[in-house]
Structures are given as structure tokens and as C-alpha cells.
Amino acid sequence: MRKLALSVMIMALGLACLGTALAEDRITMTGSTTVLPIAQKAAEVYMQKNAGVAISVAGTGSGDGIKAIIDGTADIGNSSRDMKDKEIKLAESKGVKPVRHVVALDCIVPVVHSSNKVSDLTLDQLKGIYNGQIKNWKEVGGMDKVIVVISRDSSSGTFEVWNEKVLDKQRVRPDAQLQASNGAVAQAVAGNKYALGYVGIGYLNDKLKALTVGGVKASPATAKDQSYPVARALYMFTKGEPQGQVKSFLDWIKSAEGQAIAEKEGFVKAY
Image (cartoon, rainbow, N blue to C red):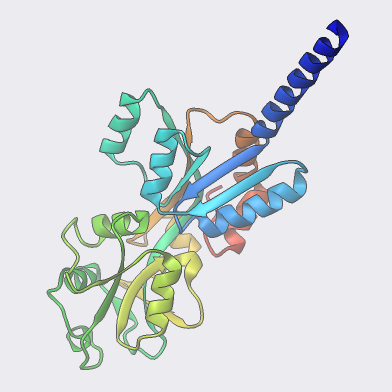
């Protein structure tokens, strides 16, 4: 009887250790839809290279990614913007020290339908269109048609950066069509001849026409030297300094091999 009890205890201990090992080899990521293509491809390749590691990735918006780190519901929070002061204070109030990891660089690019004749807009023109002061394409050298404004929703990091760098934190015009992801913006603009939207550089495709901003083209060079007016970094946040597989994954994504994935997905290498 004593031997049976001992065997049960050993088995239970073994299962507990196995569960711990499995937990250490499981990584959860959520957040930015801009970072999503990088995160998904990086997770796929990393799991192929590291048998037994399971990585789950979700695109829920930058605000949700940062919240998940503060609340401890994800190992990595993807974000296309830096943390806000109020988010840092909330983290501190909960004893959390978020650590940022730059995983790529990006440009937020204004885009129109491929048939649109407009090829460049200044920051002032973009601001006027998005705050409602400019309503017709003819006011910026285009056709005599009302501009259909496509924007990201307020939980988006892309919206936050656009709001700061283009709109000077003014309100977006009330008739703007709000979309939940870069992909949704791209699809909406591609399907409307009179639309104007904005997407991360990795979401450009042959159905969209990318505009220059004040004569500056979005490119790896202009993202790196910050000469493009709406350039930014892309982040993965962790709750404190990463450990175990999370650290290994982040070290790898910052390596030459990981950065090549970011570049292949249409973004700009940070290292």
C-alpha cells in the first residue's frame, strides 16, 4: 500500500513538472494588427526551428496588446506605438515594469485607389482632409468628387501615431469610416475610387496607390533617417525583462534571420 502511494506521488510530481515545462514552451502574443504579419511569420518559423514550442498570435489592436502585458494575460504585447503616460502609470500601480523591444521600423502611408490622379499630399493637406476642413479632391489637385475618408479606430496604434503626427491630436471628421485593421483599410480604399486611407508600409499592394507626403516617399531609407514625416518603430512589450523561451524568441527576432522576416513582410529592419 505504501509503495502504491509513493508511486502515485511520483507520478503526480512528474506530471506537475511536465506541465511546468510545457508552460515554459508556450508563448502567447496579442496586440497590433500592423505587427501581426511579422509576429505570425516569425512564430511559424521559430516553431519550425524549435520543436515543442507553441506560439499563439492574435491581432486585437495595440491598446489591447499593452493592456494584456499590464494585466499579465499575454507574454508579449505587440504595439505599433509606444506606451502612453497613463498606461505606464497604470502598470506602475500594479507593480508591472513593461519592457519595450523594437522589432522593426515602419512608415504610415496615405493610400488612394489606383485610378486616383493625386500623387502627393502635404501634412497640412492630410490634416485638413482628416479634420474635415478639406472635403473635395479638387481642393488638392484631384477630381471634383467628395473625399471618402477611411481611418483606423481609436484602439489602434496606427491611429494614435497618425493622430499625433498628422492631426496634431485633433478629432477625426465625424463622417470618417473607421476600420479595425490595416487590411480592412486597404480593402476599403481599393474598392472605392474616391477614398483616402492610411496603412503601414507592409500592407501596400498593387491595388493601392501610395502617396508621397510633402514630396517624401515612404521607404526603408526614409524610415531609418526619419525624413519621412510619419515614420515610427514597431514594438513587442514584455512584463519585465523576458525569460526562457520568450527571451529566446525576442533575441531571435532581433537577429539577422528574424529581421529578414520583418523585411520580407514589407517592413523595415531595425538592426
